[in-house]
Picture (spheres, rainbow over the protein chains, first blue to last red):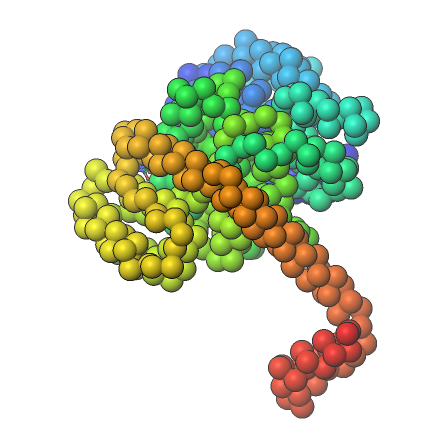
Length: 134
Length: 313
Ligand SMILES: Nc1nc2c(ncn2[C@@H]2O[C@H](COP(=O)(O)OP(=O)(O)O)[C@@H](O)[C@H]2O)c(=O)[nH]1
Ligand SMILES: [Mg+2]
């Protein structure tokens, strides 16, 4: 899918954990790769994330989660996005943080095409996004 | 969905339609242009309020406090938060929103971040268009936050109906620089971070500048605020309303509408003609020849520019 403007990315942190170093590193490297990045800050509810995606009309949503609540929270976020008429096939979803190996398939099935665990190279995330929009 | 349905949905307050239309406008597409011309006759109601000042003075924090006050007053409020694009990567961290994020779910609020990308139309023209969309979509107040530096911001201040210049107590330089031009573009001066020492001195300095500026029709209002503690915000919003009532008195409003229209059209013409010119110049043999001469020292740059301009007209 080609865009006629810079890729706009939302980096959001759902769940209760308060560590956002990783999210900020990703945000900065996407900026350096020419993308326009909005970071929500920590402890966002599914409603807040979906509403932000709606108002900002982003092309990409990246979720960073360390609390282990991904299986519970991710479907809620997708539902809130769909409730707002956001077509999740047109928005590229990825996630990072701590997603145990046995959950990766389920998370991908939900629509998160990219899963980037701890120690992922930000260049892989950039490539993942650029490939989708080329 | 066809474009007239799309436009109607915006006028009916559909957020998804509005949000997607903003993207079209930002990307300067034909669709965006058509939507604008469909909705334009519904504009003119909203208060258009600009917040400007250096990075870090607390504009976003202040805008958040102002939105909260507007919510109390039951005003639908939209924010266009502009952050600079990186000159190196063209990317941007749009960092204003995080300061207001707790208001995201409020039904009366819509926040949109924009990078100051160097589009064809320039920043001022795309923000005018987005502002018109919000206005037509029924927002009572449209706030534009920009970093105060350079021509883009002066253009935006000209487009806003009421511009608030935000300063800090300690930043001597910043207040000094108010002498050069800021007096003319601001109707309200807010000394933020008044919890820090020096706010009275800063206010006194601004007041002195105001009293020296004799050629202003509207005498600017100055006040102290503490955005982080939401102090002084009622007074600030009252000051905005005061300026708005002044503007909207019959005779003033006609003059002002015309002045705004002139500024908007002018800034569009400026960027359109500049871009057209660039296109012509870049595909021109004479240009290449003359520039080669400048590079080798045969012709000076001013003469070169005159030759090229003469060639076009
Ligand atoms: N002491 C103090 N700090 C403030 C106040 N308002 C904002 N700040 C801080 O100033 C910094 C920059 O604020 P921000 O709103 O992002 O500024 P902007 O770059 O002008 O939008 C943040 O750390 C704020 O917490 C205030 O009233 N007092
Ligand atoms: Mg800001």
